[in-house]
Amino acid sequence: MTPTPMPMVYADEPPHSELLVVQAMDPFNAEAPVAALVEFNLTPEDLVYCRNHGPVREFDEETYCVSITGGVDRELKLTVPELKEKFETVRVVAALQCAGNRRNEMGAIKPVSGVGWDSGVISNCKWGGVRLRDVLAHVGVQDGYSHVCFASYATLCQDDDYYGSSISLERATRLEDDVLLAFEMNDEPLTAEHGGPLRLVVPGYLGARWVKWLDTIIVSSAESPNFYQQRDYKVLPPTVSSKAEAKDLWQKYPCMTSLPLNSVIGSVFVTSPSSTTTSYILHLKGYAVPSPAAPVAAVEVTADNGNSWHDARITYQQGKWSWSLWEAELELPNKGGNEQSGIVMCRARSGKGEVQPREGTWNLRGVAFDGWGVARW
Image (cartoon, rainbow, N blue to C red; front, side, top):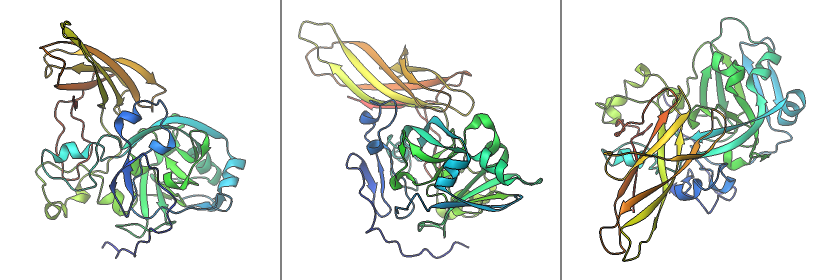
């Protein structure tokens, strides 16, 4: 049974970035214009999207603490300063992406349920914090447990009495997977707007698992029972077209972890031809994100509906968790006059040969849309 939501109070929120496009208020949900995003390898804080299920609250880093409980040898509470003192601080570049990125494109196929998002619900940042595996080793994980659950009781929540998620214990403790209890973003203290003073960072997983204002970690024998783990952020079959039809199906489908191979066109600039030229140049910039299986290996663009493809240049890629930025120029025939218009598309390829599909598969929640990127000029 879903708890009755508590009254939400938004008057005391810290100021929000004025550079973002607001898609919903109370809770505040906003994304960056994608043309601005693709100008930066690391996303400036003012362009990092905001996805909230309740009010944003500010907390004192010196006293904020996280409790570690459940199947551990000793339960413990640690403040952020204690985390910094006891454990090595590590930094990793990773893309943070909302599951609903590009939801408006899926909604154009058929109505979906959720905040209407364009393609700017993504950011690429350098995250600093301590490894979750180091903290778990410090408290001692007992045998027979399979999951680590995360919760934030620090602020109110729309659909449950707290925000929660979980990942497998194996994923939480693999050294190479860089799961962090993060208190820095781009070498600066993590602000309240983005989950400070402490949030979870799970590189390669969708943002719904990256719990903000993290205050509780539970080693468990099962997934988190929270609404956002069990009854949201799941890909239901395309035959399920209403909340009523979905009601009894949530428990039958797995929670989302990673998002698919994807690419988007961020900006299009046309070099205007003179009346005597026979062609003009289309300048493109965009981003691509890896699949769970392999990093982005290539991005291709087409201006003739996929009949011919041209390689883009990967201009930025850092490690296995970052996004890839790309640029391309297409020379197209001048059909007469100085005014040109048309459609251009992009698709990504992974290092294991996966190819971004032309059409994304529709689902009720409008998540994981991965059709070819499309832009008009």
